[in-house]
Image 1 (cartoon, rainbow, N blue to C red):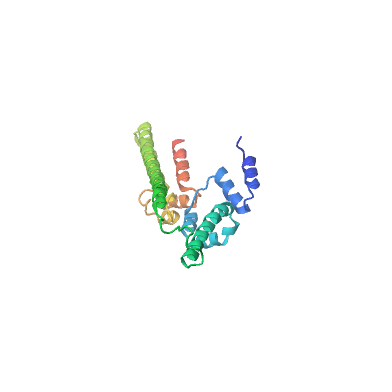
Image 2 (image 1 turned 90 degrees about the horizontal axis):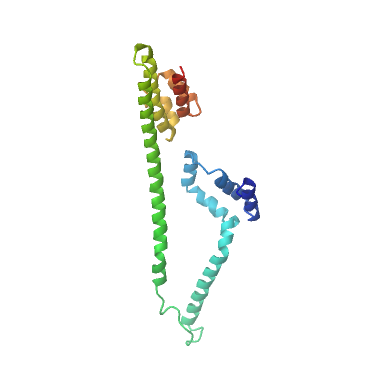
Length: 227
């Protein structure tokens, strides 16, 4: 059965580096969620230097070292053989490997690279489409919530302020969700551009002080409906 102890035991038996154990453990138990700082580091060219420095300590490199060494050794042996044969260091009756060489094997296996590129492109489009669908679901759910709330609340003057507050905070929740997913969204929240004319400066300051602005808007909506 799957368990945290089983994951750690399997990682230790493979003799991974401590950093690799931590990274694989987090990927299996707690899937990584990239924030903007992580994306900046991932796109940085400096990470290649770190990978080059730690290359020989990599467990995956050690696994590939044998097959790669065999391929490089075979290529070096064939190159040395042909060089020696063409320079006359070897008897002329020995077979030649360069005369009848063909790139057909490379042509037959090149489709694998094209498929890999296509799959990666499709996966990136699939992630974008999923994000777009989730955003559309948020917008449609907010519209349905506002419609049901305004339909349920009485239309007389005693609830006019409450109806207005529910509508304003529902729209604010959607815009706060957009800011929460954007880089420097906190700065845009403090500037109040997206919430101008929707919330008061005191309400904007309350949201800016909250660790999760969309969740804070949900709490406000819950408090309004609990009246």
